[in-house]
Amino acid sequence: QVQLVESGGGLVQTGGSLRLSCAASGSTFNINVIAWYRQAPGKQRELVASISRGGTTRYADSLKGRFTISRDNAKNTVYLQMNSLEPEDTAVFYCYAKDVRPGSSIDYWGQGTQVTVSS
View (cartoon, rainbow, N blue to C red):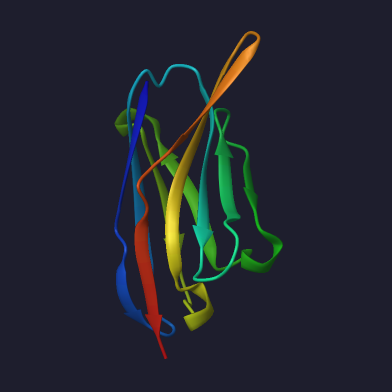
């Protein structure tokens, strides 16, 4: 089992910044990728950014340049630095981890953290 705990969300004004954290615990050895998703009211959950075990990062095209994903392996923590925030970024942000083993994979989700950007 893997537990994911997000933190760092909150209320920020347009143009501001926030850094989200996702702390992973439990059986993290087989985690292959950790990602951030977000879900705005009335919209589907969408991928924001991901980082692989090897450090390869991917971003939603619309967010490149404003958001940066990184990891601290010693702390089993992944971060999402969000800059130049806009009201359209208001959403619940979820941490996701994929546990990959021979012949199977398991998806884990955190409980989510609310990000609200005021205009």
